[in-house]
Image 1: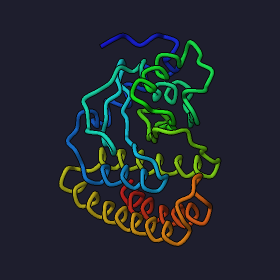
Image 2: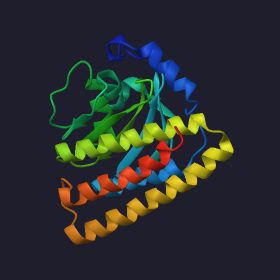
Image 3: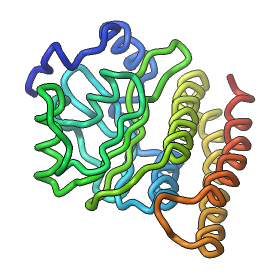
Length: 230
């Protein structure tokens, strides 16, 4: 795997990697809760690709994917998620074919365009120790606006993923399986809500507030389930 250029590394890279390894989530088995969550994410934002990425020293691994098969890893430097980790904030490219490339993101942009990706949005997975171990991401094959309200909801969903990873680490396998099933059922309910709201308000993009606000309120229920096991 190609070494990551130092310019792409955040200041807390050593502590960040220690946090990632402490949660023992890299190369873990596929779990339906995370799979259903990225499927919900893609359906909510009307995009063909969504995934949870875990950023190792020189590669991006995947915990869950929607829109492409779960793969082992991709080089960190060729991933737009590396910019999310570097800046520790939401990163959005409305049209990768039109953006002015910099030395920091040129490789990742070129790699994305090779795979016909034109839109990208990623939010950091920040853990309770404030380290960012990965990303929650969306991608599309066409340019797309991504409103501030959509970005805020993506951040909330990233917080849910981070919280789930922390709870997963704190509980034993049997107890986590019970919680995971309960949380997955809540994600199913969220999916049904998204389908109902889409039928009522249409499938325009950016996604209108009439859909985003009820989903945000319902996400509170999912967060409450996870918070009970902190």
